[in-house]
Amino acid sequence: MAYNPQVVDAKIVSHNPKNGLFEIVAQMKDRTVCRLIYEKDASGQPRPTHINRLLKEPCPICRKDFLCNCMSKFKETISSQALEKAGTPQ
Image (cartoon, rainbow, N blue to C red; front, side):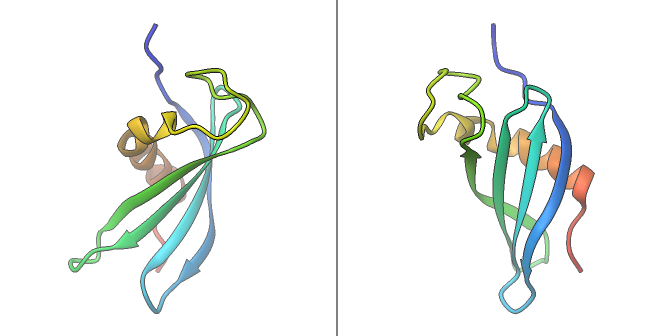
């Protein structure tokens, strides 16, 4: 069975208007919580640079209870859903 990430809630937790960096914390349907770090490119569009799984639940992909890089495969999918929920900071 392939992993299908579904963002339930997303909030902007920090924003630096000087350099265009901001963070969104996204909660998934399977109770996984991820932090997405964005930067704005030259045209002003947000681009995800990093994704980290917050260690509240085991990884839904590999079931490890420590740091893994499984969520980086789904960075673009999770990012687009999180931006729909939270929007971009002004």
